[in-house]
Amino acid sequence: MAFKNFSLFFSIFFLVVSIFVGSTSSNAVEIALPSSFHPTGGHWVLLQPSVGVSAMHMQVMKNNKVIIFDRTDFGPSNLSLPRGNCRHDPNDTALKVDCTAHSLLYDIALNTFRPLTVQTDTWCSSGAVSPNGTLIQTGGYNDGINKLRTFTPCDDDQCDWTELPETLTNKRWYASNHILPDARIIVMGGRYSFTYEFVPKNLINGKRSQQNYFMNFLKETRDLQEENNLYPFLHLLPDGNLFIFANKRSILLDYNTNRVLKEYPVIPGEDKRNYPSTGSSTLLPLVLTGFGNGTRLPDAEVLICGGSPPGAFTMSDKHRVFLQASRSCGRLKLTDPAAKWVMEEMPMPRVISDMLILPDGDIIMINGAMNGTAGWEDATNPAYNPILYKPNEPEPGKRFEVLNPTKIPRMYHSAAVLLPDGRILVGGSNPHTVYNFTAYPFPTELSLEAFYPHYLNPEFSHLRPSVIYMDPKDNIVSYGQMFTVTFSLHVYRPDPGMSVSLIAPSFSTHSYAMNQRMLVLDVPHVEYYYPFSYRITAYGPPSATVAPPGFYMLFIVNRGIPSSAFWVQVK
Ligand SMILES: *[C@@H]1O[C@H](CO)[C@@H](O)[C@H](O)[C@H]1NC(C)=O
Ligand SMILES: *[C@@H]1O[C@H](CO)[C@@H](O)[C@H](O)[C@H]1NC(C)=O
Ligand SMILES: *[C@@H]1O[C@H](CO)[C@@H](O)[C@H](O)[C@H]1NC(C)=O
Ligand SMILES: *[C@@H]1O[C@H](CO)[C@@H](O)[C@H](O)[C@H]1NC(C)=O
Ligand SMILES: *[C@@H]1O[C@H](CO)[C@@H](O)[C@H](O)[C@H]1NC(C)=O
Ligand SMILES: *[C@@H]1O[C@H](CO)[C@@H](O)[C@H](O)[C@H]1NC(C)=O
Image (cartoon, rainbow, N blue to C red; front, side, top):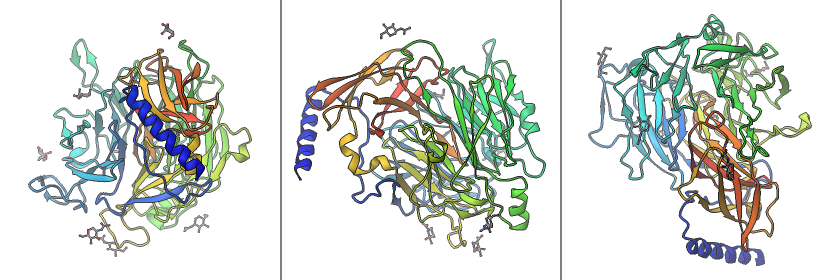
């Protein structure tokens, strides 16, 4: 009781302090925490029993809203469009006049949503957010296969999808995107497209080039019958080159000269890692601690987990036999000239799982199955338990932890994203060609759930920093320049090892979080400011190759407990 009053006292105190300093620059959303909480294994909350659309694709936007969408060409969804907004598409293969929405905007703070109108087919498409916060969304199927769409976030609930008149030069169905240091977006691969291209298109002598670039690697890594190289994993390295992983192989590409700079060793073992043998991949956090505002580049390491053995797709698709998914993860230090895969075993096999970086630098794998592959009706044995991977734990046997299970299977066409408040938003699951709510055992899932990792346990509230304001007040993080964040903390002394992290929000679909990236910034000092309030100084990332320009979630982490993030613009 005494502690509660103490907290209340300081909360009021900080409110007064923040009014006094005239702070408005924190755009963090604070959420109510569940009262009963498992001490370590995390907590699940059903946010919405049905949003009417199955979440095949998700992107968190800079105004704390999440854009969610499915495909348009398989009949009605369970979310109506506002009157008079029906989509008339003579080319649609299922419904020529469709009065239901296939996309929506979810408000994180209010837990509400509104329908959006996407015009062309976004099935198995890709996306990336441009530096000004507009989502650039590419490709799909049918009438959408070479389309470009944008969504610019707004504060008045009026914004919607825009279809651009220009198109992609190739068909992009199951392609991957990455934002580049010069603000272009690279769009790579897709079914039968062994090329990449840029959005916006290259300017050559002041003219837009229609060019796309052939890439033999995409052709070579395609298995006959099974593919196993779709949605290739792309990660931008700190030197600006692009790491590309497909099937079992990986290369480093200089996309400016269309030159393959090196091929990395083949990942050991038989398992395939890309669609339909869908594993997951992430760059581990890029650590800039101790770098000051020098131009030294951090090391980069990739983690790839799960997938399926060769032949698994044919076995499930043709013979209804669901082979056990891959149990292994590989880590490869991409910046090491003699890079070698280090393999580890997960506590369970996993396929079609989402892999996300948490603000404390740990990695979570969530959603997916333990047998089979991606594809219609091609997986079984849901992986209800997320798993945590602690990349910095020195003892390999202690890196994995099995977390608390959900009750809802999240199979093919489910998705997950990290929210600025530290929760994981989970939605979707529809392994069928239409919405089917009676399909057994995996009905089409329209619900949204949140997973609360252990750090959101209210027991840690006294360790959780709460951001008051940032300086500069426009929340801009400039390359190599210092900035400060003032925050409150209900303990006497912050941990001297506190960190400031930036996380780029990912475009998540098909178990791949495109553009996901975490930077642990250099923190020269933390100072006492007011009673129970502190000021932390950090250096912005050194360059656009380390952190492409755009909006990032900024977290302050004290003894492993992150604040709610607020949005900053890196430029
Ligand atoms: C979807 O809509 C159908 C038809 O109105 C209804 O029967 C079903 O319960 C709804 N399902 C969900 C999950 O919203
Ligand atoms: C339908 O497809 C045809 C042929 O591809 C195209 O010319 C036409 O513009 C499309 N119509 C719509 C409404 O998308
Ligand atoms: C943001 O950038 C995109 C892509 O470059 C552009 O299409 C859009 O018009 C820009 N939006 C604003 C509001 O400036
Ligand atoms: C999953 O794979 C294991 C190992 O091959 C097998 O024993 C089990 O029967 C499979 N489960 C299902 C539900 O197919
Ligand atoms: C939905 O699933 C049930 C059970 O698997 C099946 O009998 C039915 O044909 C499916 N409906 C559609 C429209 O595919
Ligand atoms: C490095 O930081 C110091 C202190 O903020 C600043 O004076 C200096 O201009 C910075 N150097 C570069 C290269 O940005």
